Amino acid sequence: MARKLALVGIGKIARDQHVPALAGEPAFALAATASRNARLDGIEGFADLASLLDARPDIECVSLCTPPQFRYGDARRALEAGRHVMLEKPPGATLSEVDDLAGLAAARGLSLFATWHSRHAAAVAPCRHWLAKRRIERVEVIWKEDVRRWHPGQDWIWQAGGLGVFDPGINALSVLTAILPRAVHLAAADLMFPANRDTPIAADLRFSDPGGATITAAFDWRQEGPQSWDMRIVTDGGEAVLSEGGARLSVDGEERAAGPNREYPGLYARFAQLIEAGECDVDLSPMRHVADAFMLGRRVTVEPFDW
Image 1 (cartoon, rainbow, N blue to C red):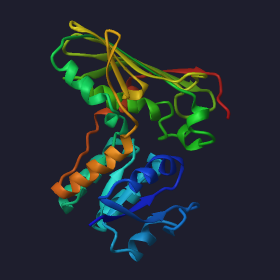
Image 2 (cartoon, one colour):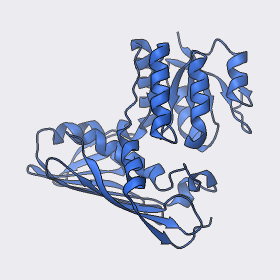
Image 3 (cartoon, one colour):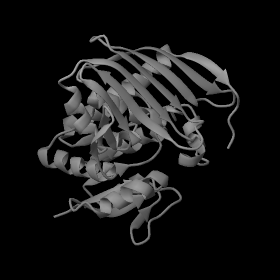
């Protein structure tokens, strides 16, 4: 029998990704929503999560799609009410917040899932398997897109805690940490802040790898025209290109893996597995790299950004 699930935060990401994914996932039934100013046709809606939890004790699971600055309170409220919780990326505004939630979930015997949707792209797992048997020499991450296209009018991303260009950049970091056979750490960063904003519009990162590989990442939200979500990986056994955000893998110019976009269906399938197994999945390695970038990064002021 499908578990009843509530979706909190009915914005662009919820409508574009979560609602369609839930429609095709037999493990869950979307039973209610909570949002200050939005509803879904045919689904019971509440103005806030507290009201929903009080009125619907039959709902077992909560999926949070609100901006990261505002997610912690609702996540803790849901766990304290005995509900399993799934977190849209990034899982919170700080590492400490998510650590607290993980401890609470473990203490209550509940499942907490900090999601990284890009890890479920079709070619990410094949790329990880291909790299496992090779010595990596160089990795170049190019993640550049147009903020006006993907976050139209969303001012929360420019406010402290909104991450700025790291909102998409953390997707790249989630893929990078999934495919590399060992952990790396950030060594240096340049962060470009618009003069009128609290978060960066671009970032250049340099990593230290105990295996000796040169690893860099360039994130930019000012890209017009074709969008770039690519990784070029040079190894002792060939050169791989992971492109389209992880959807395609080619090795020495020959396509090795590709598939349709099933990232969010993959998240909900994983959430169902975690609940059945009584487990949590809270990998904070992508978020830790972002935190390190803000700690180490050299701030560079660039021209103001306006919609």
